[in-house]
Length: 167
Image (cartoon, rainbow, N blue to C red; front, side, top):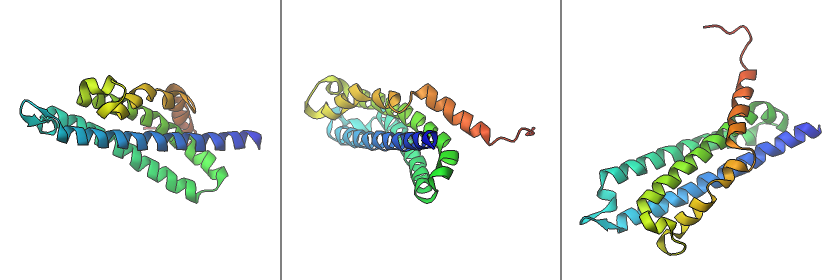
């Protein structure tokens, strides 16, 4: 019973970390969009540059992918009992945490490029980006490192593979 409780708590802890990562990434995206519409470069708004729009497309695609998976897992957490959650959701939650932290790195990288020097200066218009940049590694470590999460997710998925499976 103790091991079950520990694993169930890890699932919820990891889920909470994912919620925080995705929410923060959305806030960073919002700051970037506001900045790109306000900032002029070469007599054009920053958002009018194709390379900047590509960065936004990358950020939106990654954030919304993580969010959709989070919503799916949240629905299952609300509708499955704890024992079944432990069996069915440990792997997907671990993989969601892994992909969410990877997404945060990419969002951080794009945000720093969009904000330029303001992204590395404390305070001012890029303050949120600078804070995110300093803290982006924490979720990758807390609740289990990325490598451990990736391994756990695949090991849990492998448990459902029948031993007689063949191509």
